[in-house]
Length: 213
Ligand code: TMP
Image (cartoon, rainbow, N blue to C red; front, top):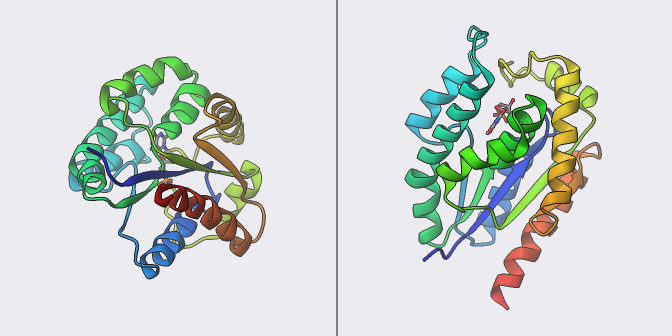
């Protein structure tokens, strides 16, 4: 039986979700909550190896379906090896990206179809959807500009796509918000980092409190 909570953070490039995620993890850990902080694609050795293949700037020949299948494969391994065991032990799992990334990037922006990509992912996740998904919304122009100013973040194969692709990713996420209104919460990521953090914290805290009552 699953006792923990599975929370995912989503958004286009440069939305700040990775920074927000580590701040959330620190804050909840301070409050005495068992938190597992992880990411996709990656989070465990096999999935990190798959991540390298997917994001390698030299792999320009990669077919869109191959890309979607590799993300789903990395997701499966990460889920069974890391996420599910933690949930069974009662952890709050905070995961940087999950299936919605595949639906927005491969399903919508790569035009494979949201339903088609969902169905290959269903094989990987077996109905294991998050309890809550925070979607950090940002104009891709602003997001890409932020990335280009950051020395910490390495530029990957998907970052090199045209602006039009990143705009389509954002549109894809808007569709997902209407499709999964119960699970997804939209947060304006163009505000200051502190404001974005406070909004994200409130959403997660509300869910944690609702589990107690
Ligand atoms: P990151 O930069 O947030 O670590 O994510 C790596 C890249 O992979 C990012 O460009 C988004 C992309 N991605 C997909 O296209 N599909 C997916 O399913 C996932 C998890 C990430």
